[in-house]
Length: 69
Image (cartoon, rainbow, N blue to C red):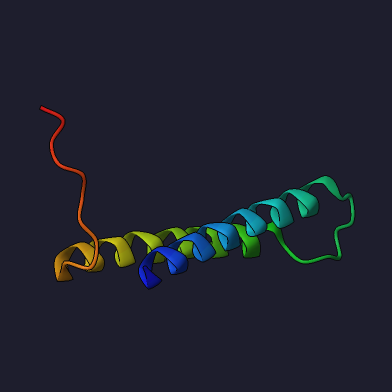
C-alpha cells in the first residue's frame, strides 16, 4: 500500500511541475527560472516512477493484472 501512495505522490509532483513549466512558458519575462528546470524534474520523476514500479514488481510488492484471456 505504501508503494501505491508513493507512486500517487510522485504523479502529483509530476503534474505540478508540468503546470509550473506552463506558467514559465506563458510569462514573457526572460529573467525568471528556465522552463527546462521544471521539465527536467518531470522527466526525472517519470524515470523514478518507472524504476519504482519495476522494483516493486521484481520484489513482489505489487502484482500485475492477469492476462485477459
